[in-house]
Each structure stands twice: as C-alpha cells, then as structure tokens.
Length: 309
View 1 (cartoon, one colour):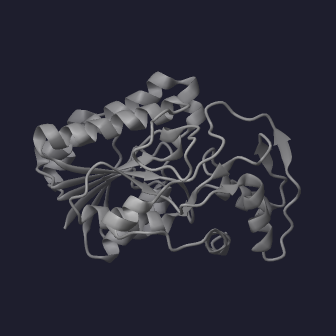
View 2 (view 1 turned 135 degrees about the vertical axis):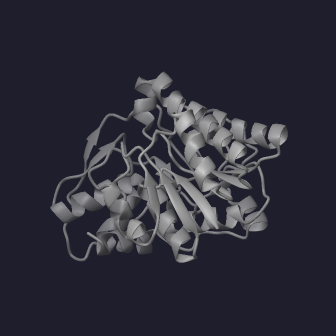
C-alpha cells in the first residue's frame, strides 16, 4: 500500500514509518527537517522509504508529491509542537498547525487518498478539565494557541469529510514518550529527565512537580495509527494510558529503573504559561470502537528509553 507520513523524520513519525515498512507498505516521508532528524530515517531509507524535504505549508509542492505518490492513506504528524512557542508566536504556530493541515488535506483529496489519520492532542485541548478522565465530548478550552490550532485542524478534517467525502480521524494523544525522543530537546520531559539521569545532571521541574500527565509510549501510539487507518471511524479519539502521573512520580519511577545511576533531587523553577495542571484521558472510545488500549506501562517504557542511551 502507498502511504505518506508527514513529519516522518520526527520522533513519533519515524517510529510509524518503521512499522509501515515492516508490514510491507511503500512509504513517502514529508518533513522539512526543522525538528525531525534525517538520522531517524537511516534504516527506513535503506529499506526503501523516500524522503521529501518539504514544508507542509508549501501547498503546491505537497500537491505535486501526493500526485506522484498517489497514497491510499496519509498519516499527518507534521506540526509545531512547542506550547511555549505557540504562546510567544501564535500566528506562526497557526501557519503550521492550521494552514499546514489544510494543505495536507487538500493534497490528499486531489490525489484520491482513501483515509487521513490526523495527529492531535488531548491535554492541550481540554485545558483544566473538571472531569478526569476526560472524554472526547468534554468542553474544549485550551490554555495555549497550540491547543486552539489543533482544534482548528480537527475541524478541517471533519469539514473535508462532510464536504468532500474524505475519510478522516483525529487521534488525541496524551504525552507521548519513547525511543528517538530528543533528550536535549525542548519537548518531552520524559526524554529530558532520562538524559539527566545518564549524564548525571540535575533535573529542573517547572512549578511544584505535582502537575500530572497521561504518558503513553510511542509504540502504543504507532499501533493506534495503524488501527485507525484500517477503520472508517471518524471524529476525535483519545489515545493515552488513561492514568495520570505527576512529574515528581515520574522522577521516582525513573530512579526505580535507573540501573544504579543517580538522579539528583530536582531544582524548581516557575511554572510555564499555557500548561495544564492535570491531564488524564478517557480512552473508552479507543477501546470500544478502535480495539486499542495501551500495553506499555511507564516503568517498562522508561527501560526501553534507557536501553537505547
């Protein structure tokens, strides 16, 4: 099957590309390499994947690539993912996460794609939810432009289904972590803390550390994408562990699996604007309608990261 993965050189995208190749798909990757890494695709390119170093905001170039590939399924993961950047530069965030998504949908439509699996966000959309775990039908009230842009992207997916008959689904991820997440990057506190453990550096906790997240391992997210591609399920679907773990509890878990490495007590810094206090996703719909649930617990997921460092 012909597939396109936007953002395929990134942390989640490259893991998905590997899974698609393993099952026999022919994969075209679209990534401008601003945050994605060509090295994430070393094995994939040797196995036949093709990388197009293109920005999803270049609508004309996207249409040319899609027209040549003629994908049956498009996995849309390319995005501006830094909440802080979205707060500081909301218009720039929207050009990627809104206009870029429109360009992907239009390219998919004109190329005759059967299905678009869109990557969205859970905690970034629900904001400070009073109901935990939070279901897909809960009130949307993001605290940052990042969440607002992702909501707009979901809306355009649904519009293209109604207007053009293009089959779409939006997967609302919890906080994804796992192999290939940049330990020196701005996003992904799990990877950053693993880097601190290995390198003997003192971690920084923003706020009091009692803020919670629903962490989900990347292989579980990849499996959700593959399942979603093979259904006609539409609308938003939460993809998480369905549990909440505080940042301080994350540090304790990392100490438990740290192979004897010492993780220093954290230093605390002021909390950052736009970040939610608590997040836990209700994954009932994913379990019931997608046949999916997370299989990797946090400590096993941490061991997978450390094994590769």
